[in-house]
Length: 82
Image (cartoon, rainbow, N blue to C red; front, side, top):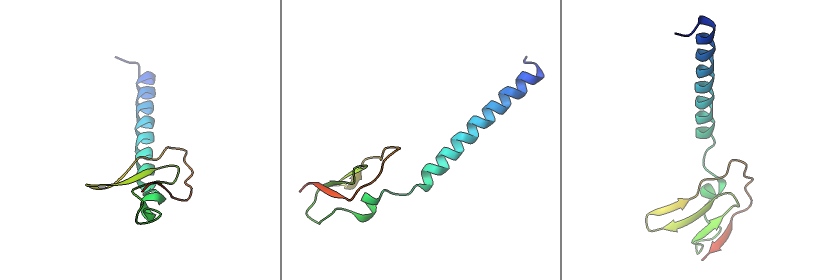
């Protein structure tokens, strides 16, 4: 059994870790969709396009986009494949 001070330290460390995870999930959920998915392709003939953060393409199942990097700065959408 842990002494009282050690038990308190472990409890506080676990609580702090859980709080960090909860905050990260909330921040990720509020980020919203990338501009490249909101605006769509630069033109209707474009099959695959990017904003330098996310690559999207039209598939038989619908729109498919990659996940943006954590430190990404979106640029204007440009077509990669027609």
